[in-house]
Image (tube, rainbow, N blue to C red; front, side, top):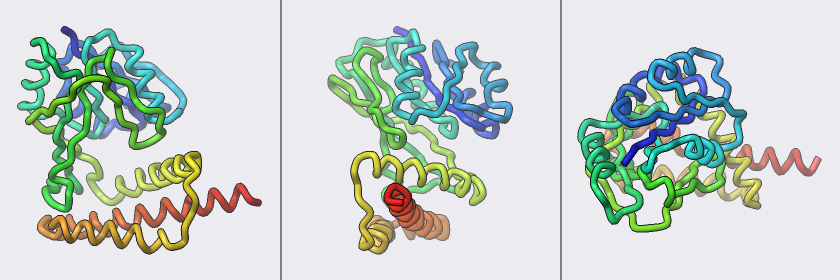
Length: 249
């Protein structure tokens, strides 16, 4: 059977080569670029001729669009700031080459923050459904935090995916504004209402969860990430309030 990799990109010239190197063994790589102004598309051209361009329409729709452009039996969904480890590569190859009663697989993640592997605070147990049979899976129509729904049995692989996001605070805040905005917009679309109490409750709960899940064992990195995560939650609710306010005006 054949494996297709899908990647959504925008201005990922600093990440994309390492990502593509980690999946160049796949049968096919499909890239959907959403308007890069750097050399992302040019760099992708070194690894694949299946590069498509689209306006932004949310990650869910973009990934379904990418899947439509594939010819493989299995789909591996990977982001530009992620890398497939050697063990995971070998496991995926085995899954694709041998009959399986599973139609999808969860993959454990190793999350890096500012170059540091985050093993506590709940981050060490993170896993996502990223490998699935093309005819059994479809992404939910969500602009962010999109998930693939698989109709069938789902297993779990042992090799991990490296998530090397946020190399420094500059990169963190570049992504921060984009993600807090589209998350607030999605909440508004779903009818979630701004609640003043949430400005205090949710950031506080996030920080407490970090403590209870031993996030402090990641040292300064863990503490900084917990503070930023609480601030992220605070800002997305402020943006939800801003959206509601603009609608009423």
